[in-house]
Image (cartoon, rainbow, N blue to C red; front, side, top):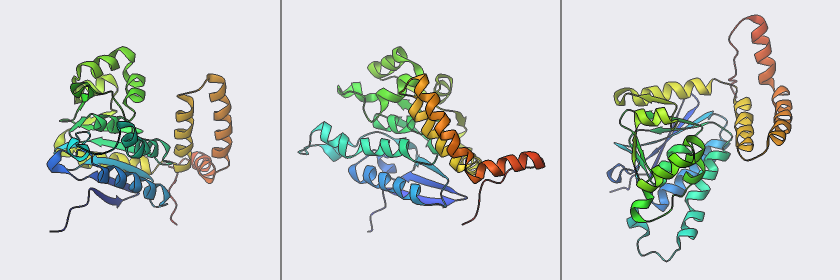
Length: 261
């Protein structure tokens, strides 16, 4: 019997959907899944036909975190494992030149929670939930959770969620700012695709530069952010998208930011 791929990749209308495909394990991550997902992100970044990337899960879970059976008995330290697998993945998502949507279709636990929070846009199904489960096995949140979560909910709420490993359901996730939208399970895949296609129709170069500006501003001073904005604005203004946007405004029509070829 041929083994199923750990990542399913599909492109439609400029949207590359990468599906974690270990549904029998709630898409718990092993090395193959993490390394393949990182490579698929690299390929998507290099493909001019791809304007938006969606990361989601097969079956009823998004990602249950690390598959502990995959690392049991391995001659590798925690530090070595993170630096070889999860850290490159999170860096690839945050450094991608295209918007990344994390479409959380079920439970996102442990490192799966970190993955869920790493997207530029986070869309949740009604049955989705997030659990910073690390403390249940006396470990420290990793894969970016200590960076993402307090920036979304503040230090104290982040510490409570991490210390007590409380489950956050979809509506609470929306209230806390852990996701931008919640959709009913039965419409989730269609709603995610429709949202991604709307994003894919936006000016790709401008969104790439916007992502760069936001990533820079998160860890710098106001003066440095102002200087960086000025530099990036010049790059945006010199691009054909800006000319098209101004022309469309003057002609009172919708701009066309997608060009073939």
